[in-house]
Image (cartoon, rainbow, N blue to C red):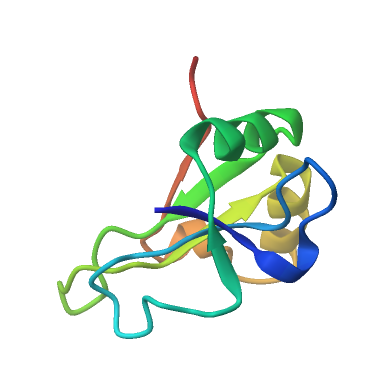
Length: 96
């Protein structure tokens, strides 16, 4: 489910974006507030974000790993060492 970090919400704008996975061990994080997909994608698009995610762990289990990044930041972080994408993650930009 789309969510925001509740303490970062300002006026009519969602805060820091997150995903809440209903079947994850800590799925009811009290720091997160569910938001609509419309709110989520509006902020996602306005901030030119990309989603980096991992479908399976190294041992083949389903992974919930994901990270919302600015494309420029991801490029810089991959130069400092191993990038998340090189460890089995996939980067996606939302297409309209």
